[in-house]
Image 1 (cartoon, rainbow, N blue to C red):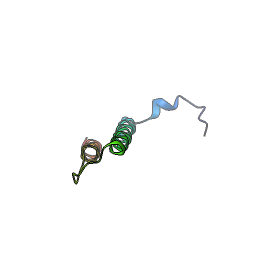
Image 2 (tube, rainbow, N blue to C red):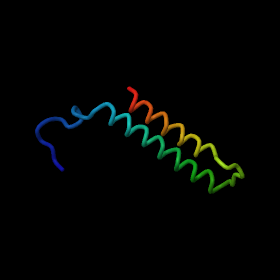
Image 3 (tube, one colour):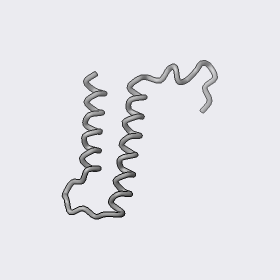
Length: 67
């Protein structure tokens, strides 16, 4: 897609920027968790990366819908 009328980045909503940042952070946490768990095994039911992903998701959804 090509957009020639104006600068496209000026029309991006702040909510979309926030959502993209949260998604990038969550992807980074997931990749770090996959790398960490490939080296060491954990006997815990929920690990630090799973808990972090849940907190990031819930926090992101709260910020999006209640702001």
